Structure formats: C-alpha cells, structure tokens
Image (cartoon, rainbow, N blue to C red; front, side, top):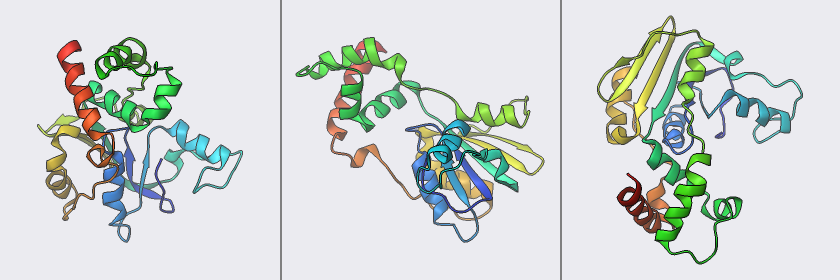
Length: 212
C-alpha cells in the first residue's frame, strides 16, 4: 500500500500487485489539490497496516475499513493484467527474496529456473481480482460495461473502472474522458527501469516458448 493523503478518499486504486497501481496512484497524487487518492490491494491489508502501525498509520487495535473512509462520490479503479505476465513480474519484483522464500537452487541456468518457477512457484503467487471485493461490498451484481479498452459501471455516486494493463499507453486518454479533465500518466515502479529487466525479458520469452 502506498503513502496516503488524509481521508476521506475519492480515488480508490484497488489494484493487485504488478498491475500498474503505483503508476495510477502517482498520477492522481499530482492532482492532490482536487482529489484524495489511495492505493491498496485488499481491505484486509489496509486493516493489518493499522494494527501494526505501518507508515503512515499509527498503531490501533480498532482498524477502520477502507469503506468507512470514502467520500460520498468516488471512483474505484482496478486493472486487469495477463496472469502469466503478472506472476513473472511479481517474481522478479522481489527476486532475491523470492529465490530464498521458494528455495530456488543456486546456479540454475535461466532455462532451469523457468522450469522450477513453473513447477514450484507459479501457482503460489497471488492472482486475485481486487474489483470483486468492491463489487461484493456494494452489492453490485450486474456486469460492468465493456468499452473495448476498459470496463466501467456507474452506481449512484460511485464509478467502478477496470483498466487493461496492456492498454497503458491509452490510460491518459481513457481517464481524461472519464474524469472530464486532462489526466497525465505519471509512471512509477516500472520493470523497465529495474536492474533485472534484461533477465526478466529473457525469462518471460523462454517461459512462453515452453509453457504457453
């Protein structure tokens, strides 16, 4: 969960790991004078951060639900990303930690590490859809409207949006149309800027050749 602006929130980026949530949060933080964004993965994580006093929270034994801290008019944003790409990206995001956590043998070739990942790691990396928790809470049972590059649903004063990760180059246009003002995407936490990027690209190429 990213650093927050004081509640109540009106832009709730309810996106799982490695789906562009940090970029969306960073984008709306640049609009902090007219909106209060927050980025989280699940309500449970939001409450747990309060229980243990993770920055910027002070520790409390009575954590508040995110749904108690939302303005009367608000936007919820989730992102869909191909599950394979998402899991490989998640593995590389904390690569050394994950190698220890999953007991990856030392000195594997990249082909061997791809095989190990498929056999022992792939199914143990989270792949939840955050929007489902939101829709369940607000008892929204009918489907979101598909617009080709994204999905959207309006209910009372709430707008539910699910973007496509592979349409990130269009996010500025999509969000500008939805919000009725110019939204300039401010990238954050990009894999392409990490030291592991070349290895990540090769790993993904080999994985798709072998298992997809």
